[in-house]
Length: 258
Length: 266
Image (tube, rainbow over all chains, first blue to last red; front, side):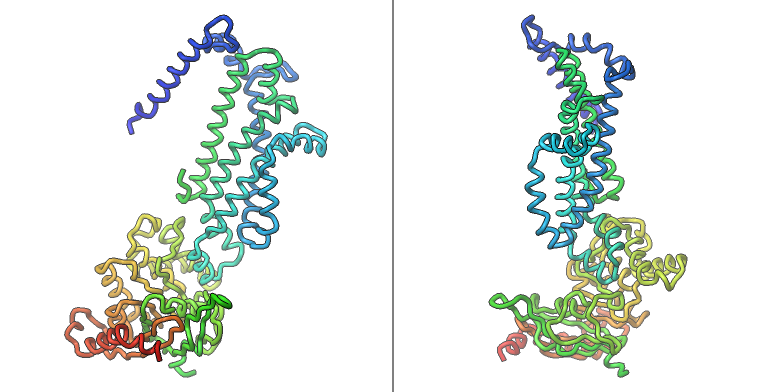
């Protein structure tokens, strides 16, 4: 398709929504600021994302970076453990019977419900937030990996048996590539959930982080700052999703279509 | 060792399921295949001929009976009984070259050097005329080409017995004829021992030295065995008027359309 055909429709839509917002929020007794006021209020924040006045008084870049670090650590741990557990319950009938009911119950627990418990266990905000990310992201990774491993076609298993591939060879040459489309579906859902959970967790644990920034702005009645932060959260979330999709394309060697 | 007993199938029975849902698929199959012989097994679909091939391959366990290869019992799959699967079963994430190389590396990893394994992979791709597409993925080549690669992969294992499970069943008539010629050439050149499952009468007569006809399931048995007395190399067009060809074709058709039921009833 023509480049203009891809770029123009969302740009026009964004413009229309901006105009509607401006009209709706322009009355003096409106509770939310119109876009013109948001831009004027947050001009400083937009232009100086890197300032650091010590403590929690930092530019948005530092808040986002702190949040991304927590997500990266929690998510990578979840990806490692999730794929390993998914392979286990996908390939062993008994592991499946023993663990699957447990996972089905645990995965319905909302991310933030884990926070008090992890604070009690770790007695520190940082590892608690990372644990919340971990426990949020791991379930879709486990479940999708297990489905992928269970769905490896019998044909490929027969090829492996005729060639007498050992466990390790089967894992790397057949299981991982065959399950890759499922694994990456799980990883994409996982990264989305991680980014959803981090904002909420940071509102409660405080310190540097985009979630804390939003909560702090609310407490100071800086509504324009909140709106800017939300836009940043959305854009970063979008790029995280694309990043996982792209790595799926590269690693999946053509088997992952996104 | 008697050369007639290169591959020996002895009183093989196969029953699936238990109790009420029990179904007997194969009953007392005994068969001997000589070294270098091309044997076709023909029967109506669902008669259990693929099950028999899978038992020889070791992919399915026989309920009773034995399979011997060169006097040794086999009960596990292995590259000495390479299978060309009906649906080619190539790994879609590997190139044509890598699909064959995977087998070569696994089977000859400690016997050949890296360069020798590369050459051996190329040699087998040349045999099946697939070198031109060796960098392509299975998704980018036609069904007939995929089956050529499947054959190259099986040949690359230097198997004692080549097991073909309806290898051309999913191909159009022209591609199928073309591949049959190739398989005949390869068989003439390498002298492989081949066990081929088919439901195509012409294919069975054209390619094989003996045709084993199976009765209809359940509890399929060997109905008749026909010796195909045709000299090699064979040419499908020249054979059309050959009396031995007509006789062999007639015998198989006669069995499939008349006798397979009677044997079952008996």
